[in-house]
Length: 111
Image 1 (tube, rainbow, N blue to C red):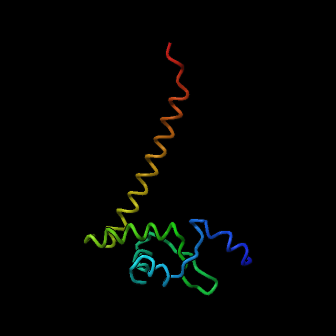
Image 2 (cartoon, rainbow, N blue to C red; image 1 turned 90 degrees about the vertical axis):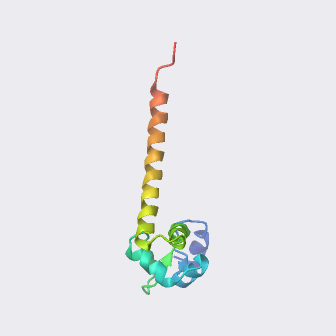
Image 3 (cartoon, rainbow, N blue to C red; image 1 turned 180 degrees about the vertical axis):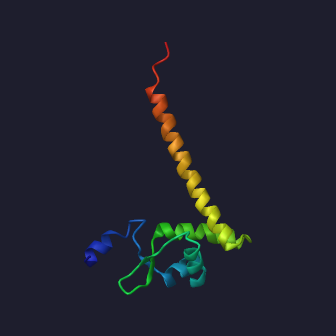
């Protein structure tokens, strides 16, 4: 990937643009927190060619949600599980809404 290719991906929420140190700085947390949520399988950072963790903006948003729960006193494992369940619920609600729209579109018009 050339520098021009990388520059064009900066708007991509899934592009792993942030090092662990920068991610921790942006979140106002420690690198240990990022490792802990990785061990809890909340996020899985990509690895650079040298083996260093890289985080995307999407992953940072998820980490920030977990951090907010931890800051409120929730244990880290529970915070990670809550965030995972919230995401699953959001996906299920989106799918249900799509099914409802499809069902309504296939109904014959009322006479």
